Length: 71
Image 1: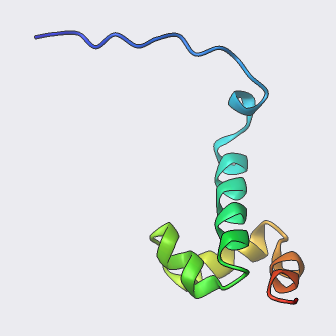
Image 2 (image 1 turned 180 degrees about the horizontal axis):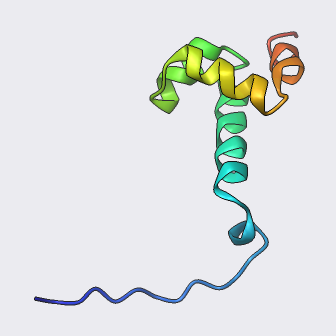
């Protein structure tokens, strides 16, 4: 069987983030792209809207998400 060879990854500030922080940043970027529409963002992220809402509250992003929908 062939062994996979992986190229070494240089350490960068982003690579030292926790998985939760990377997930939060990705969710935030999707929410921005969806103009704060949680239903659309949840669909893009492949999760239930209620799950997305719980994560938004847990991460303290609720007020920021509400401001995305305002012109």
